Amino acid sequence: MAFKNRCTGDAVTKQSFLSLAWLDSMSNMRDTEDTLEQGDSGIDLQAALAMAGGDVRLLRELAGAFLDEVPQLLGSLRSAVDEEDSESLRSSAHQLQGVMQCLHIDRARQQARQLELSGDGETDWRAAEKLLAELTSTISSATGALTKFLDDKA
Image (cartoon, rainbow, N blue to C red):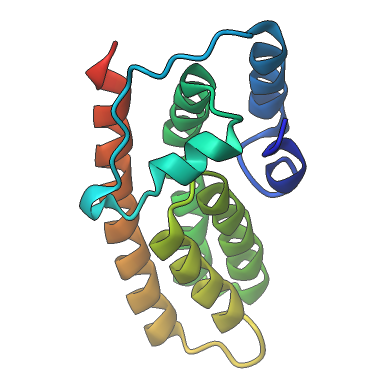
Protein backbone atom coordinates (compact mmCIF):
# COMPACT_ATOMS: atom_id res chain seq x y z
CA MET A 1 0.00 0.00 0.00
CA ALA A 2 1.70 3.17 -1.23
CA PHE A 3 0.63 5.60 1.49
CA LYS A 4 1.21 3.30 4.47
CA ASN A 5 4.91 3.93 5.01
CA ARG A 6 4.59 7.68 4.54
CA CYS A 7 1.58 8.20 6.75
CA THR A 8 1.46 5.74 9.63
CA GLY A 9 4.07 7.46 11.77
CA ASP A 10 2.58 10.92 11.96
CA ALA A 11 -0.94 10.78 10.67
CA VAL A 12 -4.26 9.43 11.77
CA THR A 13 -4.11 6.85 14.55
CA LYS A 14 -2.29 3.65 13.74
CA GLN A 15 -5.47 1.70 14.45
CA SER A 16 -7.27 3.64 11.72
CA PHE A 17 -4.47 2.91 9.28
CA LEU A 18 -4.39 -0.77 10.20
CA SER A 19 -8.09 -0.88 9.41
CA LEU A 20 -7.41 0.86 6.11
CA ALA A 21 -4.61 -1.55 5.31
CA TRP A 22 -6.97 -4.46 5.95
CA LEU A 23 -9.63 -2.90 3.73
CA ASP A 24 -7.06 -2.37 0.99
CA SER A 25 -5.85 -5.94 1.17
CA MET A 26 -9.42 -7.28 1.08
CA SER A 27 -10.55 -5.14 -1.82
CA ASN A 28 -9.47 -5.83 -5.36
CA MET A 29 -12.30 -3.79 -6.80
CA ARG A 30 -11.68 -0.22 -7.82
CA ASP A 31 -14.56 2.24 -7.74
CA THR A 32 -13.84 4.91 -10.31
CA GLU A 33 -17.33 6.36 -10.73
CA ASP A 34 -16.69 9.17 -8.25
CA THR A 35 -15.77 12.58 -9.55
CA LEU A 36 -12.71 13.95 -7.81
CA GLU A 37 -12.10 17.67 -8.02
CA GLN A 38 -9.69 19.91 -6.13
CA GLY A 39 -11.63 23.17 -6.15
CA ASP A 40 -10.94 25.80 -3.50
CA SER A 41 -10.51 23.28 -0.69
CA GLY A 42 -6.76 22.97 -1.13
CA ILE A 43 -7.14 19.20 -1.47
CA ASP A 44 -5.61 17.40 -4.42
CA LEU A 45 -7.98 14.44 -4.39
CA GLN A 46 -6.42 12.96 -7.52
CA ALA A 47 -3.04 12.81 -5.77
CA ALA A 48 -4.68 11.45 -2.61
CA LEU A 49 -6.41 8.81 -4.73
CA ALA A 50 -3.07 7.85 -6.26
CA MET A 51 -1.62 7.60 -2.72
CA ALA A 52 -4.48 5.18 -1.90
CA GLY A 53 -3.55 3.00 -4.86
CA GLY A 54 -6.46 4.22 -6.99
CA ASP A 55 -9.03 2.78 -4.57
CA VAL A 56 -11.83 5.32 -4.09
CA ARG A 57 -13.38 3.29 -1.28
CA LEU A 58 -10.07 3.30 0.56
CA LEU A 59 -9.77 7.05 0.02
CA ARG A 60 -13.26 7.44 1.50
CA GLU A 61 -12.17 5.48 4.58
CA LEU A 62 -9.08 7.66 4.90
CA ALA A 63 -11.18 10.83 4.54
CA GLY A 64 -13.58 9.56 7.21
CA ALA A 65 -10.69 8.84 9.57
CA PHE A 66 -9.37 12.35 8.88
CA LEU A 67 -12.73 13.90 9.76
CA ASP A 68 -12.78 11.92 13.01
CA GLU A 69 -9.21 12.82 14.02
CA VAL A 70 -8.70 16.42 12.91
CA PRO A 71 -10.77 18.07 15.70
CA GLN A 72 -8.54 16.45 18.33
CA LEU A 73 -5.37 17.54 16.52
CA LEU A 74 -6.63 21.11 16.18
CA GLY A 75 -7.62 21.05 19.85
CA SER A 76 -4.08 20.01 20.77
CA LEU A 77 -2.69 22.88 18.73
CA ARG A 78 -5.13 25.31 20.34
CA SER A 79 -4.08 24.14 23.81
CA ALA A 80 -0.40 24.43 22.94
CA VAL A 81 -0.84 28.02 21.76
CA ASP A 82 -3.06 28.96 24.72
CA GLU A 83 -0.57 27.46 27.18
CA GLU A 84 2.46 28.79 25.24
CA ASP A 85 3.89 25.26 25.15
CA SER A 86 6.50 25.16 22.37
CA GLU A 87 7.14 21.43 22.62
CA SER A 88 3.43 20.55 22.32
CA LEU A 89 3.09 23.06 19.49
CA ARG A 90 5.88 21.38 17.52
CA SER A 91 4.58 17.88 18.20
CA SER A 92 0.92 18.61 17.39
CA ALA A 93 1.80 20.61 14.28
CA HIS A 94 4.06 17.79 13.09
CA GLN A 95 1.28 15.22 13.53
CA LEU A 96 -1.21 17.42 11.70
CA GLN A 97 1.31 17.99 8.93
CA GLY A 98 1.48 14.23 8.37
CA VAL A 99 -2.30 13.98 8.14
CA MET A 100 -2.40 16.78 5.58
CA GLN A 101 0.34 15.14 3.53
CA CYS A 102 -1.55 11.85 3.34
CA LEU A 103 -4.62 13.54 1.88
CA HIS A 104 -2.63 16.04 -0.20
CA ILE A 105 -4.08 19.07 1.58
CA ASP A 106 -0.99 21.03 0.63
CA ARG A 107 -1.88 24.51 1.87
CA ALA A 108 -2.77 23.17 5.33
CA ARG A 109 0.36 21.01 5.34
CA GLN A 110 2.50 24.09 4.65
CA GLN A 111 0.71 26.04 7.38
CA ALA A 112 1.19 23.19 9.87
CA ARG A 113 4.88 23.14 8.93
CA GLN A 114 5.14 26.87 9.62
CA LEU A 115 3.53 26.31 13.02
CA GLU A 116 5.93 23.48 13.76
CA LEU A 117 8.90 25.67 12.90
CA SER A 118 7.49 28.56 14.93
CA GLY A 119 7.83 26.35 18.00
CA ASP A 120 11.62 26.27 17.62
CA GLY A 121 13.65 28.67 19.75
CA GLU A 122 11.86 31.82 20.89
CA THR A 123 8.23 31.34 19.93
CA ASP A 124 6.31 34.40 18.79
CA TRP A 125 2.95 33.46 20.27
CA ARG A 126 1.07 36.23 18.45
CA ALA A 127 2.39 34.91 15.13
CA ALA A 128 1.54 31.34 16.21
CA GLU A 129 -2.01 32.46 17.02
CA LYS A 130 -2.34 34.01 13.57
CA LEU A 131 -0.94 30.90 11.86
CA LEU A 132 -3.33 28.71 13.83
CA ALA A 133 -6.29 30.85 12.75
CA GLU A 134 -5.21 30.56 9.10
CA LEU A 135 -4.68 26.81 9.44
CA THR A 136 -8.08 26.36 11.09
CA SER A 137 -9.73 28.24 8.22
CA THR A 138 -7.91 26.15 5.61
CA ILE A 139 -8.83 22.93 7.38
CA SER A 140 -12.44 24.08 7.60
CA SER A 141 -12.54 24.38 3.80
CA ALA A 142 -10.91 20.98 3.41
CA THR A 143 -13.30 19.42 5.92
CA GLY A 144 -16.27 20.78 3.99
CA ALA A 145 -14.91 19.39 0.74
CA LEU A 146 -14.19 15.98 2.27
CA THR A 147 -17.65 15.85 3.82
CA LYS A 148 -19.15 16.62 0.41
CA PHE A 149 -16.92 13.97 -1.17
CA LEU A 150 -18.15 11.39 1.34
CA ASP A 151 -21.80 12.45 0.97
CA ASP A 152 -21.77 12.47 -2.85
CA LYS A 153 -22.13 8.71 -3.09
CA ALA A 154 -23.31 7.77 0.39
